Amino acid sequence: MTNPTKMLSTNQVLLCGACILTLSMGIRHGFGLWLQPITQSQGWTRETFAFAIAIQNLAWGVFGIFAGMLSDRFGAFRVIVAGSVFYALGLFGMAHASTPLQFTMSAGVLIGIAQAGTTYAVIYGVIGRNVPAERRSWAMGIAAAAGSFGQFLMVPVEGQLIERLGWQEALTALALAVLVVVPLARWLREPGFAGGAPAQREQSIWQAVQEAFRYRSFQLLMAGYFVCGFQVVFIGVHMPSYLKDHGLSPQVASYALGLIGLFNIAGTYGAGMLGQRLPKKKILAFIYLARAAAISVFLLVPLSPASVYVFSSVMGLLWLSTVPVTNATVAQIFGVAHLSMLSGFVFFSHQIGSFLGVWLGGYLYDKTGSYDVVWYIAIALGVFAAIVNLPVKESAIQRTTPPLRAVGA
Image 1 (cartoon, rainbow, N blue to C red):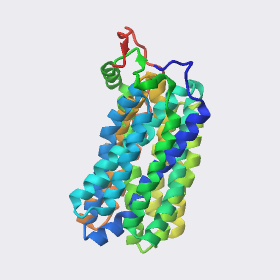
Image 2: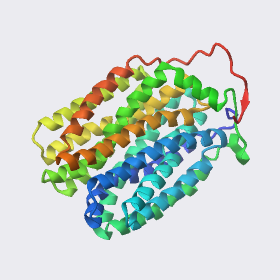
Image 3: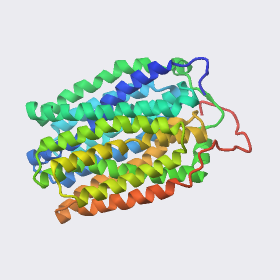
Image 4: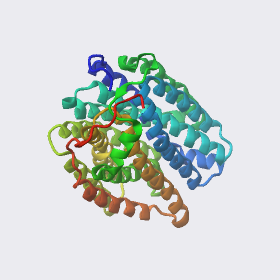
């Protein structure tokens, strides 16, 4: 681990990490607003757009593991800077892609890599190494709330950019804006990683991976996070089109996504605070069960702007509230030496769920003309996730035989 006497201040970590997450997560939460403008302009199906975003989520998950490894070993600074550059290239590529393959490579692969380097796994690794354990869940809640504020802030901005500039110019403007992450990353250069020197840890990467994947609670956390990805990405990408299909204006969708972001500020912060006081597994079970109930009620009541706004507010409280609690549980069980990497593995499960949620939404809509089946799947998965989180053991893992000491492995 990094030398505990050489740590960044909590305020510095939270401020810079929050700003990076606000921009990075805020942009990606608005991608659903581009579905209809791009598909109508290019003559593509919704499945074409959905597949690219599905690849984005899968690439985010895959490369998130390696971004976590690099961040744990060499510090977060270089990873975040590289992620920012990939983000700008991906957004610019989205604006100028003329074929589905080009669109998938830019919106899917490049932005997926970018998100791996600029979002939760990397930022939470910095938090874990620099914030005391007794404040860690709270600090992660603050960071998750920043990502939620980004959604509240950026989704309406993106909607206005599309309306005023057109979808291509709007993407180009965002490509320039995301480069602001580069100077912010300089404030997250950790002294323990000065000069790119690897940190000293008690386990090698392979030892840490073996230990985690053999541990039942880690497997259960991954299963629950799979469901989280399925639900939030399906709703975030497809709900604007679902609402428009039912005769509601695009402004309703923009306000709905904005409300999710607004209420998620309170939800993620509250979940982080509660994680310091209550069993985290019970918090997670409640969140997933409440999501299933909220979706069920949303489908049962008559659809109107009012019902959309109520649903968005409730879902906002539950949206990313799983993030600080899940990551704090991983840190509590395994420690922080390999936190970014282990969070990356858990998040990879989340992104497999995201891939299926966004792709199935487009595929089944094109096949059936409706999103109903995917809504029902989301309800059933919410109940499943609530059940699998209850047996999780949150206490620190007991290592009977200390592993060989490894430097930078």
